[in-house]
Length: 384
Image (tube, rainbow, N blue to C red; front, side, top):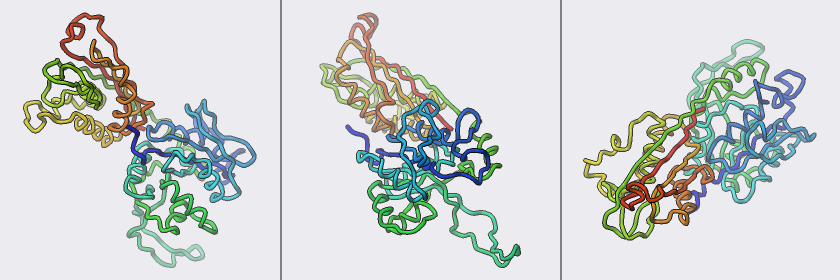
């Protein structure tokens, strides 16, 4: 099973400007904050997000590139920008492969964007053709003339716009092709074409590096430690009557079935426990007690999706899953690719971040005697 189409997301990072207001001897996107340049920090934020399939950097037209794959930790495409931001965005959009359905357009100078903001924009694209983060204006607003306050401006329904701004790929390409003149951002281009843009919560730390003082603010954010969690799970289910076993969301024909209060999917139970463990949230039995009749025969992906959503609510992204099934029979190898696709669907991460493998216990112990199946799983969560 393929991942949902809305998860085919490309990212265009626009970093082709001159960046003169920030000061320094080179444009701001080339300047270092600690170990990495501004552009490298920005690309790293998206490279670590599991929903991103393609990463494109729009660099200065002179051929200089403010980032390296080694620093970013991921490959990315580079295209030369234009004289204006609009031209640079069009160049980036032209490089997005047709296999992607949606695109995030992001200012290269917003190096402090978090996984949480990126996730909120992508999630909003499930139901909207456009989405962008914003911060509600809370300060009083004045109008000024010749250095004096000449009036006041209401702040109701006003937001400070941020990026990434996400869109259905075909829709935003057509909007840019039809737009003439300069635009403040891609939301303006989208709205001119009739695209409705959903507002999601932005973050104060998602600042745009504009002046020299912004480098110090960004350094405090970027050099703060990330919260990386690892969780382990272990589960066992015995064989009993049946004609199939449920493993990692698949019904695999077998001369016996696995026994349990739910559908006894030992793979999904183990991964669910690993996520709860990383969150220090107990185990599956605490959240879904086997004594509760409402969970009798329940499909185990319900439990896994609960753990996934709990991690998301706590600000974590699931970045990797490793699952090992231990049994003599049935044979797991022919099914591992389909299992990875199922887990990809349930967890909303790409299948290349999921490992499913199998081993035997060399005919030793209860698994060796064919009495049941055991499973080990490890997951990694990231909050940045």
